[in-house]
Length: 123
Image (cartoon, rainbow, N blue to C red):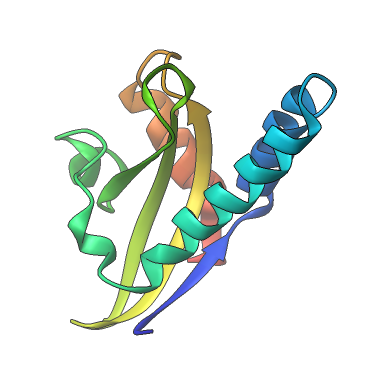
């Protein structure tokens, strides 16, 4: 485990909201989904750079590379947006800051900038 994974409160709230949408309809599926997305997020402890950039302009827009990790299957997939803050080339912190369903439109540059700005001095 070379990287520490930090899920900011906004992303936790988004995960909780998704879980609460699934739970009334399919409680067992909701529990499996929650465990699965948590496992996927914490897989970023190892080699978070394996994930592609969320948008080609991410570094230019936000001053930080924003990467994207996918979770789920086809029409039940989710996008997990995160940034890597390196202490050394192989260690640091991965900050997960946004989770959304794959069918929602892509984040615009302005939205990405706002999300990264909201991280403020947490980085």
